[in-house]
Image 1 (cartoon, helix red, strand yellow):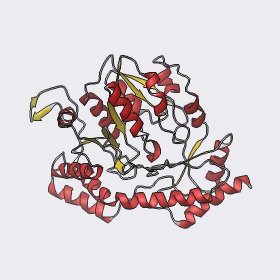
Image 2 (tube, rainbow, N blue to C red):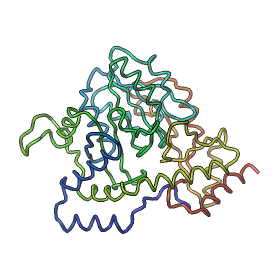
Image 3 (tube, helix red, strand yellow):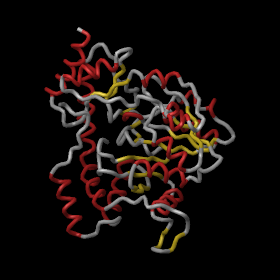
Image 4 (cartoon, rainbow, N blue to C red):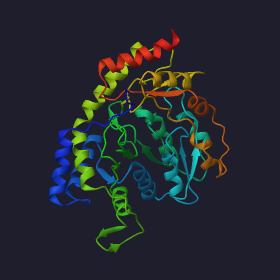
Length: 356
């Protein structure tokens, strides 16, 4: 079976974990600090704050910006549910805006019509590794005095005109095993704001700056030394991983027939966390056909957030036609760095043969 995703963990990661175990310093310490510094340098930001997951990175960033009950946050319905849940965790309300059918990201041209006096922030999601239209989003945010929190959990190293995602607003990243780099679990917040960085560090560590002296109500959202040690090694490999994903994606796009292949907007760098095609009217047929031939696929996402039962119970009744249509057609094909040319040719033959 050709797997949809494979975390690439090699001898260096194993050695890094052993060194931490031998040090007996397992909780947040020097490795976490080193990973934060390296990740901030990679993204081009002043600060990076490590957390226990991408979800806790989002929640911490939202709380650090003072977003809470009575506030609204503009976001996309076509994402993993954690993007919207993190807004709810803070007591605020997600307000969904439909997506651009070419990139699957929030349609920036629709954001302003969703603004109300309660709007506090915009939370764009760089879905599947393609950056959002950050120039348009930042322009809206500046004109309306809004916070921007980038969900870059699938987009490590993605760029807009040479600028890394996570450096426009406050960035949030995930290091879940399927991501382009992993720490097994873990997250990161990036920011140029000293104030937001300070608040985020307090929130993730029980609200304490000095041990047992608590300035605010906080959480245990810390990253471990083991996770950070893996992350440091993985980060050094990220550009190589991105190059391999992009090469695999280019080969698939060149050869595939009968499907809508992913778009890379000029001036953007897509890092292909997922290689997501659209298959009008026959997505499930193709998925089953490929599975029978030993090729794994995935549907991200079969139901937009506003249509999830959990959100229907909260009273959401939006009709967002693009997100709803796309969710019936998307199918992710393997694109990860462990694929061989033979694997790619099998995937291409499998897709193309269904239409021949």
